[in-house]
Image (cartoon, rainbow, N blue to C red; front, side, top):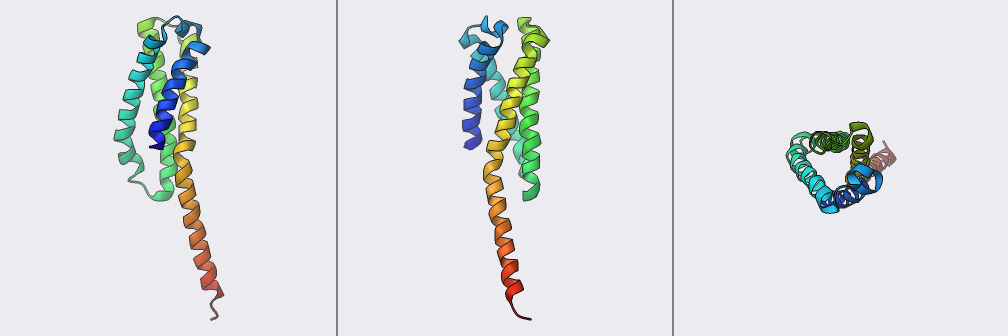
Length: 144
């Protein structure tokens, strides 16, 4: 649920961000740019739904956070590059002027998605570590 909310917020903000930061994207209507970004996000969410069970959930608990980091950041970066290529090939936007801004925007939300996704996992692992440490202390207090 947390990832879905983040993706919806990222979709809205990236749609607005594109027009505010790039004058070339600003030539498109908000609905046109929003449709293009929405298409990218639909593919992004579908890819995530397929890859999370195969790459993250099958890993040991302590390794899942690292895999989540690489998966989220990699997906957002890949789809930022893909959207940049689309903008260049279909809309004729220059790669350096427009494409880099789109890629950086997607990478920013990919990085923040990692922190939002990992926060509950970090809290769970910290509680488990504290529980193991307190059990060790109790065992150490038993006279031999």
